[in-house]
Length: 112
Length: 113
Image 1 (cartoon, each protein chain N blue to C red):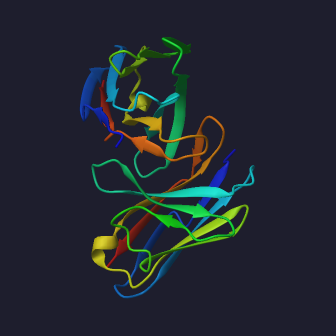
Image 2: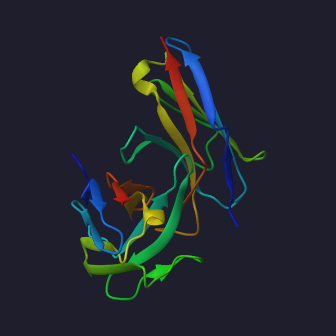
């Protein structure tokens, strides 16, 4: 079945860039996603990228997709303390309207 | 504003009792909703697919008699944890899929004592 992997922890200093990496196995995934979860809260969609794109930029967020290597990354520029959260990489499993397969989440800690 | 409303956000119940969690789609009609469970320091695992007008589809290893799902209308799905035990304590999240993304509820923290 589908599998999504991420490193579990990342610490950066405030103002630096954060790069969170993700690998996935389902080459048929049409969309790949990054979600943010703050403590005790649900999931907030940060951004998503269509599989025929290599890069997507949205303000401080840059998503890079290497479809050949099945590697997805999320770069957060000028990381702030408010960015401290768990970031989940996810792929849409199956066809339209199907469920998501999530990675284990990367806990980002931003140090002052 | 919120697209999906999940209620309650936190609940503490005694072992052996049942707890109902509601998931409402505020902006979309949803023939399908998903229920996830998040274990501590782990990812979200799909429990079941809630289908309006028909039975829910459960993932392997999920007890359908313990986790009752009712998709009462195009905007409401409920998850009832029956005869709850401490090992059912977890964070439960529902989602409403759309064309290119899914909208998630705020989640429900269930603690069984």
